[in-house]
Image (cartoon, rainbow, N blue to C red; front, side):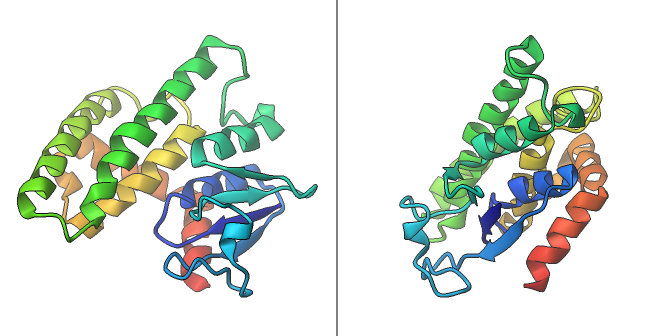
Amino acid sequence: MKLYYAPHTCSLSPHIVLRELGLPFDLVKVDNRTRLTADGRDFRTVNPKGYVAALELDDGQVLTEGPAIVQYLADLDPESGLAPRAGTWERVRLQEWLNFVATEIHAGSAPLFNTALPEEALACFRTRLSSRFDFLQDVLGRQDYLAGASFSVADAYLFTVLGWCRFFSIDLGHWPALQAYVRRIGARPAVLASLHAETAT
């Protein structure tokens, strides 16, 4: 398998999951500005959408969209515990979390990267994001992980997008349970290895 990634993007989530599972894969870096891969190819020939992450399987098929990729990977090793089995109520709950992270945290953070927006608009997006963090503070004040007692693919995703807060000068210290959660996930060997690999290339 090949994972197409760019540093400081949502592709970190499937990268973490690949390492959590101990699966063999190659990392292919993509320049988000030029849309070129590290070996000079036009990334849009891999993913016509033009953005990471993309997972190229050994048979040449390409899977895109982080929440789909991480579920696919977790299902390669159902005993890993990274996702409940398909068809269970617990799996539906996991999908609920993945959708929350995608629509409320990931998409909610994206406008803050646009420095061309007026401060008034940016403030509105920060306020909305803060209300979502309030919700997460309540949940993670009661349990260690999104889906309950153990780490799942939803945690890999949430950790990834929370990492962007430093670019927006958002202090997670206002949400102590969320801050502790980031530290807890960030100490996992697979997470540390993924971050190291992405900064070393």
